[in-house]
Length: 276
Image (cartoon, rainbow, N blue to C red; front, side):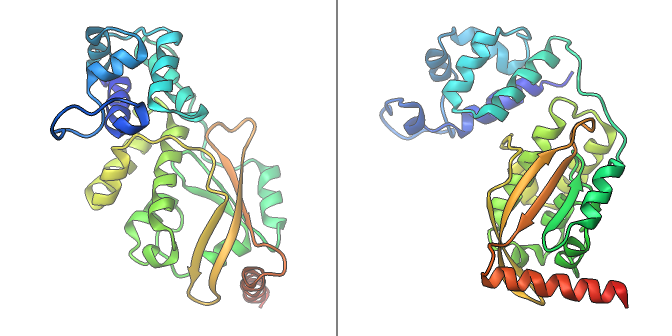
């Protein structure tokens, strides 16, 4: 049986520095990254044996108080704390998320198609692009795997030049899928995607192993497009009611900036091509 709760706790423990937790360093260097189990247990106010059983999957019913204490020790934000609670509910036999059809809501589809001078697209929890406007299609022009943002980031070599902050983009996308999927990692389509990316990309394996959780994108993204040059875009994301795991992504440029001009040229060329 999968031990998703234990895997998450272990990854967060290894990512928590002694400086963050306020733990005094002992003499000599540490052989393993992050904190020791006994240090986490002390900071969270539980016994070492109890915390060890949590990581090993032998304790499956932690209280909300214990989970919140661990979230505080690890410095988890709201999204990651909710993820921790969901993993615990799953470990004790709670219901997992309901899978939904991978199609966009018709009203959202019309909204995206009619949106101009911005990038607008909808993704599901695997980050498959379900619908995109003309500007988004032009934005990803020439890049392979643009129908899935994870494949685009990790399997397209040109993505490291396209995303000027590639590591930040890669970490967010993986953290977003972990948040969207939650404890439902036995979905065959999710398993297949994770296996595909793990086999093909060492960077994906490294970042996936961090167990980071993040839904909201960074507010600013920097890109280098092969036709219009560099763009700095502001991001916003929105959950779509009635379609769990789906989110609407919108990006726009600050008015009057070179990025705004570049986006306008990209928009004009795309619409000219579409109408020809």
